[in-house]
Length: 109
Length: 118
Image 1: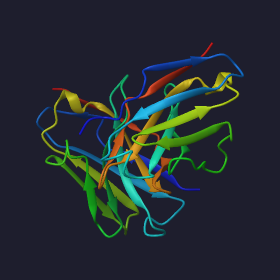
Image 2: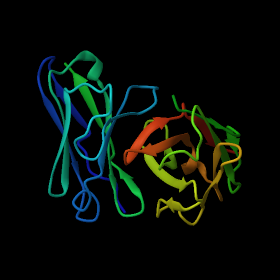
Image 3: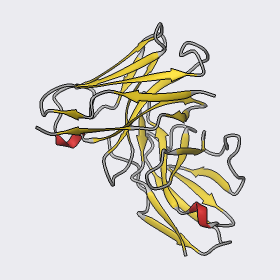
Image 4: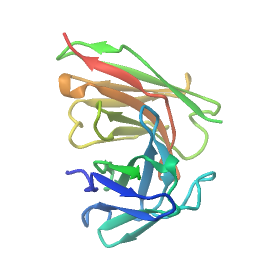
């Protein structure tokens, strides 16, 4: 099985909105509403930002939102802030195992 | 507050078996409907899901590692463990243990670096 496909990098100015795509297949993203997104700052532990496609854990800003269309999941960060600069990973259930994306580096200009 | 802590050798020789343990505190590993997972990350690279264990002992593994991975749980010690056999340099990574709740890894350990080298 191949990793989910994410853009290597996305950038935006403070206050702008950006969207990170996560392209899977009909065997993973397209079959299950079980996509999660993780934020990882350099040298830090990944942090869960979105689960089950669009749900936010307690304490995660509502500037982060998730969606899905077909085999593609997306993470949108609105009102971009300096602290949002990090790596972001999508993850999808693939029927008995989990599959991560390759990761996207978000740069705040 | 659930806390997880990985432990085990930081250096493993090629062809040997990597063994790590994750100790869970702040909650019984038996409480709730959770899987307990291992995820790894080579330096400068992305995350890779290794596998998971349920408190019943039921397991799921990454198909690409399945032939070399064993994950087990010891509820009496509130721990779960990872064994990865026949390791090579490609298995060098930071290994994280995590709790899988809400269909995602919601609590993570700090990670432990395992280097495969002679």
